[in-house]
Image 1 (spheres, helix red, strand yellow):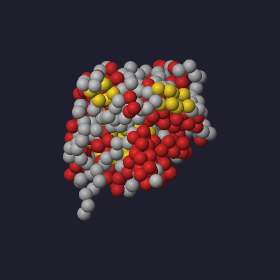
Image 2 (cartoon, one colour; image 1 turned 30 degrees about the vertical axis):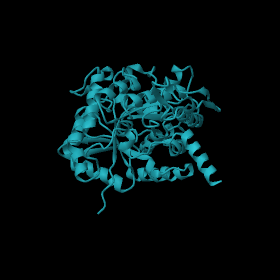
Image 3 (cartoon, one colour; image 1 turned 120 degrees about the horizontal axis):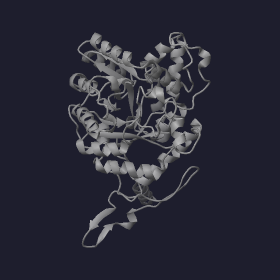
Image 4 (cartoon, one colour; image 1 turned 90 degrees about the vertical axis):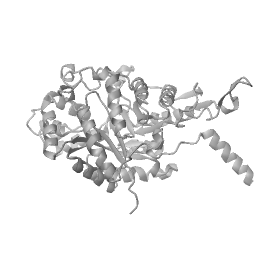
Length: 455
């Protein structure tokens, strides 16, 4: 029997955990969001479990309305800027990849290219950039706009944004900086290439004032579930966060996205699709489910309704909690997170009450509650069915859920030959088995030389 292909594992980390009531758990640390020591401890636990990636999501905004409700669930409130945070975490770890979100709607390509190149240098080749177009009008208002641009326009800008960032990462050839004392020469001028870009959204004429990132390019992550988002991912992404809570939906997404890559001349193995899952592991399934119920019962009902309304892009707060949500309250379309919108609409069409919708909605993540063997069984079934190449795991309460997974589930995955025993290289690309991109100027010169030889 041939060796089983190793899966990839990433974890998305928010202060005290990803459950909206995590801050109420007995183990919660009130100031976790601004305590770099807390993040370093979480990264060290994940690194002990040989995770590929430690990931920080972000939104460049504070929710400025309904503060009385949001005060019961401080998601994205009072926490550190992710790149600054990960630069510190880099010093407390040595192998685990470090990923962060940066919006293409509210940044410039130069800033993103320079920041992630710096993080890649600081971490010795472990940086990853999650390309997002943002999905919050709160963010738009921070940058002088009343609301987000239309979905298609945001993705059009994102495509050009990534193109420019890659050009900036390639402006210096890898061996440009030589520091030749005898010649008094720090770099070879011919190995610098001016970025002269003029497009619909960006005009850039210059280059980065830093040598190429150790990985050539930091790993590019994308999570769009719409047709436009899938197309951007097929062209540019090296990690994609899956957006289906069912194995059937995940298989469809996997086949569709990987099937789009050929038109861009890309190898499907060079894109890792990570299914989004929430894991609660205990010695028995009953104990794990009891933990989940306990945390759900801690959640303030108004917070659950608010979260559902935000992702459905409509206000549901006038509806009774224990009656079905009328289907005519579903908007005709979404301009924000289309996968989340579809998940909520599906729950409403099942005839669930508003309370049930709020309790079951999990932002397109499957929830696995069970023993280590049961959790590993479900993970294996997803991989064997062709639903994913690995998992983006969220943990409701940290550090307990993360440590339990590392101590109980990871050894079971290793026993099955599904997961590495140890890291085999220092960079995130090596963890994932994704090749280092060839500098576009070096590639062009090599192609021209080859054509001249055969002429």
